[in-house]
Image 1 (tube, one colour):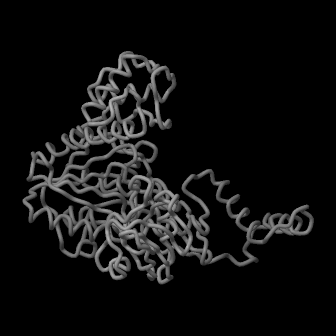
Image 2 (cartoon, rainbow, N blue to C red):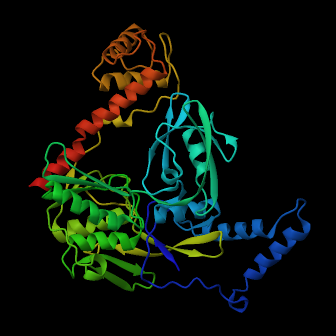
Image 3 (cartoon, rainbow, N blue to C red):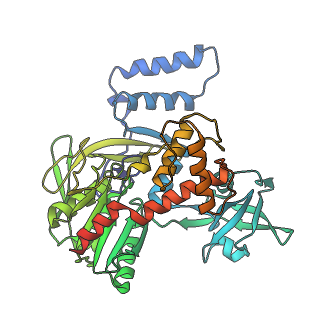
Length: 458
């Protein structure tokens, strides 16, 4: 089976176009490949360090793909292949529990129903001590989770502390499917359902349909599709969702191969099983909305006139196939380009919003790498601190990167307002609170979402 990709990064989609992954016979290879074989033999026999055929083969494949000067044509092996496969399936081998950092401890934050962790008896609040006998007490969340995850069907032993007593649970990893779609009624207009799609993976179309049904029951009479930051996904999922929103026979996307042959994909019952979204739609996009996101956005905009709100999209107009070449490796190769229903190629240009609404300037503030900042400090971190304070309504004085008395007073005022020790030093808790407040401010105001809700409600 081949997988065809249109994602801005490594995300892709399944296509209905057959692509042969069969290797050519030795007799059909060009004469120049004799030089490749001679080079291989020369390295194997003469290089001053030992080499392996696996190493040289991977190098040759990478070299051929790099010669194409196409960032989307790549060789994926081992972890890279597994990462792509997990992204496409939106699933992984795990136990169905989420882990959070709680002070200096790692604790179980939530447990999914009907999962190994639920059946084994893990509980929210359990402190994570060890995985397979190796301590994770000083590990970060990512490291601990990576140790818990693994191949479906394999066993993992998780040691936890509960009421001062340690217990070890042995569990078989199961397939855990992640949510790629979430939805909720807009907080200001309860007739607008906001549907956020993170990727286009195997469960996305099904989750989209479920979300639409749920929001309809809650009173939604129009929808905002939030595709900001969505790098793309599987074509069959984009086709299904677009077909749900279009009339049968309307063109979703055109795929054109190197010979100029064009295949039109049109809305039909095969894709949507008769389920239709007839409510008004508005689509949110930004510079990280790519490929499959752009396919869906263009299809709805050009066929229905659904407004695009936000910023210029990424501009990913090529199509890749992923073809397995072994159990642990695959090649991702650009094989075609895709066009919007009206025949536009948006590669390196992107989609232009119907309503251009920029992100707030404060979202571009550089992150602070220091753990603490104090009076007399002077750095880029201090400048970011001053920008954070100003965005939250505090007056740090001139934004110059110097932690002077005015900045100290602004920090003190923020600490008092947020029930933190008011010492005027931007310690780790204060910095975390500043970032949390800024995130909350954006989520509360989000001018792009507000504009999209108004557009959908018209």
